[in-house]
Image (cartoon, rainbow, N blue to C red):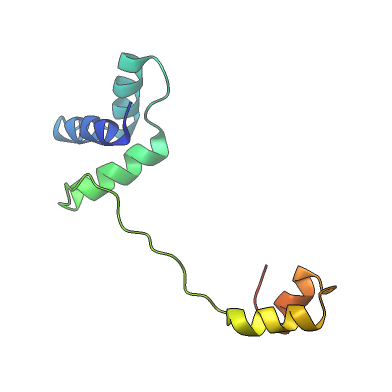
Length: 95
């Protein structure tokens, strides 16, 4: 089953005014497997309550790089025996 189809079912359950517990039970009882989880249904019902009925994924994007890759590469070339931990401490980033 595709994710978008599951979201349509959650939207249907929202319009039926089903609680999270009943929405999960209703969806999963039809398909016989755990298609809907409590966490997902809570998330989507909250979204629908706010008036947002868009079923597409939210753009996520990639986090910004905190270390200049050229500087990091130069440090590794100077001493290739450094551990990742040592490099993270040198550049003040967590692993």
